[in-house]
Every structure is written in C-alpha cells, then in structure tokens.
Image 1: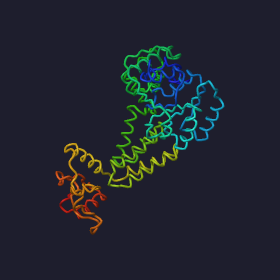
Image 2: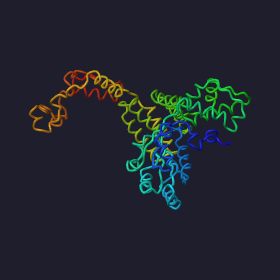
Image 3: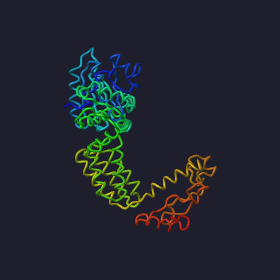
Length: 423
C-alpha cells in the first residue's frame, strides 16, 4: 500500500500546508508561480516541510516538463543526460523545463559545475532542495544564479490541520473510527515534520486492530518505543541516540559506542552528521590526552565524504572505537570556556605595547613593538616575557590534566616558566 504521506501529498498550492511566508496570498514565490514564470531557486529547510511537494506543484501549475535527480544516486553523466533531454523537450513559448535536485548539498563540485551552463542559459529552471546551509554546500557560481528560499518547520496549527485532514479525507483512514484525545506526543515526536507526523499516525492506527482507535500521548509513545527503527532524525529519539553515542565514547566504552553508531547507520542517519560529532568528541573529550584522535576523526570525515554509503560505515566504526578507547581530557574545552568567561568579565583590555604590530613610523614612535623579544633569537627558542594584558598577567587559564601526554607538556612549561606557570 502507498504510504499515507504519499497518499496525502498536495497537488495544488491551496492544498499545501505551511510556508505562508513563501506561498501564502501575496507572498514572493506565490506571485511568481501565479505569473507563470519562475527563476532558478534553492529551497533550504529541515526534512518533511514540503520542499519536494512544492517543486512538483510548481511544475504542475506551469505545465512544464519536470525532471528529478537525486544527489545521492546521480552522477555528472546523469546530469548531462537530463539537460540534453530538457533541450529537446523545450518549446519556444513554453517555460523552461524544471530540473529538481533533491539533497543538492550532496552533489560534488564537478556535478554542480555541470549544471552552471544550463542554468545560466535558461535551458532548465533549477529547483534544488537541501537540509544543509547552501552557503557551505553549494558552489558560489551556482548559488549566485539561484534565489534562496528558507522553509520553516511546520507550526503546531499546521500539523493539527494536517492531522485532521488525514483522518477526514484519506481513503483508508476515514473508514476507521479514530478519536484524537491528545496530540502532545505526536507533535513532539514529529518535530515540525509533516511526513513524520503522518508516519506516526499511520503506525498507531495500523497497530490497533479494533475501532475506535483512541489516540493518546501514552499510546503514541508506546507504539514508537515498540518500533526499533522509529528513529526521527530531528526529533527526540535522534537526540537521545546521538547523546548515548557521545557519552559512550566519553565513558571509554567501545561496545556501547559502536552499538549506538549501528543504530544510527541502520536508521539512515546522515553520515556527515555522525562524522562531525566524532570531530567534536575528539577535541572536547579526548583533546590533548591523545592529539591523534583529532587527526583520526578528521581523516574519518574526509573518507566518509569520499566513499559515501555503505562503505562509509567502516571508517566511522574505526574512528568511533579509536576515540572510545583513547585516554580522555577536556582541558582544552575548559580552557577556552574559562578564557571566554574572562573576556566577557574584563572586556577589551589593551594589548601590551611590546606585542603590538608597528607597520607605520608613527606607531613605532608611540612605542608599538618596543622591547618585544623574538623567541627564535634565544637558546631553546624561548625567552620569558609577558603575553597577557597587564591586568591579567598573573592569571592561569590552561590547566594540565592527569594523563601522560599533558603531564609531559606541563613539565616543559615548568622548566621554561618556573613558578610563573604552575600547571
């Protein structure tokens, strides 16, 4: 059977729920659609807020050929083939064919480059959809040729409207006797995602053999907990599992860490999200106790970006186990936190004159750079001098923790600074 979310996919803007700032009466995108001419644009927003649906509605409204590519499975060759088909299907008076690219942030630079000419010359009108910030993930030449529209998570009223519409109009649900007593759990687990809300509704109704189906918060929570793959990438379970993953690494339990990794992999979590969390863990929880952890985590991130799924699970597992098995330190994390607190407390203290840059004659006359000691001119490439503002010159910020790597650094600091740097 076709999933409920697909059965309820809107066909027109009047059926479309949410994003009133874009497609409501008088809104910018609505005006372009009603005028029958749109320019290339990128839809940026979280999953399940109607990016794909909106692209399909626009294509239907404009009565223009509509081509779809997935950045996960398509290569440069696929892009070029679609562009050639679009050229042959375009008629003089007709709007340009629409090329919809889902998850455009996963396109490589070469794949994005292959789109430039077709977009610039109007061979196709590009509609890209992304859950990631396009400023980081879409190449600048392509981004400059597209408008950017930001889609928001659906609000409570939008989700409730969708819920009641599904119960009242869906071919199968309207045959059941469904009574909605509580909606807090459904709304919380859906997290502003229309698709997720409908999936939850369908799961709960299908699990109840007899009518009436009385939907309560307790029933929704129970049904989701019974479904081991009811993993929501932006909702409560998403954050619970990533929390368990990071805490297992911090707690030096490779078994727990790789188990929670497997939960995320099996549920279809974005591998880039997992890899980013490993980089954060390497610096926050392992830090100077094993600086190689940062190198491993970064190498893992690069490898995952290069090889993709499913092979990317292997470097993720390797990095996860390495980080979990490594000695732990959060001294760098604490040091930057203390330094930030100190800056906020003391404000913009002046830089000591000897540390200032002196690119002009006037600055030199004012004493900028005077008495600065160039470390490399001294034995061991070190000489004692003041590097903090005058008001803070006695403050210690970094404190070495009790692990072999940091104790080695601390001993070196004691040898160089003596009592001035008690680690």
